[in-house]
Length: 461
Image 1 (cartoon, rainbow, N blue to C red):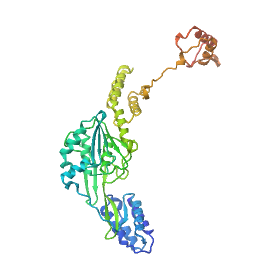
Image 2 (image 1 turned 90 degrees about the vertical axis):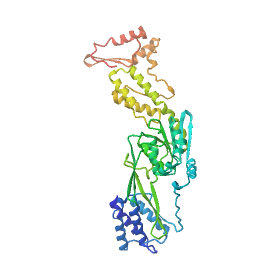
Image 3 (image 1 turned 180 degrees about the vertical axis):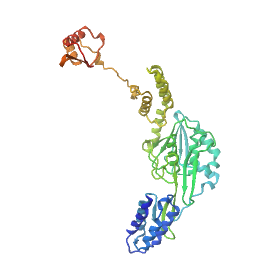
Image 4 (image 1 turned 60 degrees about the vertical axis):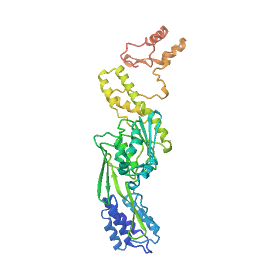
């Protein structure tokens, strides 16, 4: 894509209509900002030179209306770099708003902030419900360590399973992500969970899980369901994306917003034009990709307002998995005829990867695939029967032998075929088998029908 960028921008700039006071220097300054701040500098190779050539040659035509110009430049930059986050705006009355430096706030305000962005409940069956609307950074976490441990994390650790609600998480800091991932993972080995590149400083920072945290860890074994919505953005997306791809959590809800690690609105020289630029980027070492722009896709798609109810029913399903696996193991151990394969089958059941099972049908399909793969026996089948419906293996009509001789003859004619083929070859076909107790009359009719047949050299059933 990088090698086509200069040409695309030149074509864009050449389409601007003349007759205004637009300064070509504005576009050149915009290019300079991108070169110094855009988080994919490799896509900008040759851009500044191409724009300068277009300016010098007189091919750049100008637009008189400033907002129209901003819109045209936005379309051109987004199209050239394939990045919808790049925005050029004309804002003569823009007043930059500096976000407060949260770590420097008084401790009382930090406590208020956490209490208003975190909610914890213990539901029926010891299911934890944790809602976090802001992922706090490592500095605040360090200041409030004992408060967070005693009122949140140690209480969550005592639950049997957890619904982690990030549907309303619209703010936060990436530095808080390693703590959360560490809470739901083992101390060792440490996991490289993210790599963040910052363009203005030209630095790269790696995020890893932590060998120890304040309080008790939740660990890897208990069920974890993360709820997401279209509003979930930023650090919360990093949490959901990482835990999903570590195969530690089931994501339930809607695809997330697809935010950015860091975006800045930068004034273009001394004009009243601004360009919004993503200045940092995240790349997951687990997938080689990112949650930015595209968002996090859920394991189970459902509208956000129904997510809690669905999560409860899903946890109910997952709570039955150990019993189901144990029951199947007992049946195979007691009844499976190929005893030399039993050990391998039991091992496969115990080691089956069932972390993302989301329904009874899903469980049956996965176990069925695993067992048939190991046994190479297509007759070894696991089925899920809804409402405990019984499987009828036999056709009751098979044994309903009529007493009426006429009906009995019709039955024999239907299920019992006899032919003499060329070269005196006998053809005998059974479509059904009946119990030996069916009666002498049936045997007599079948014997009479077969009597004309010469000694058979072939038959079919």
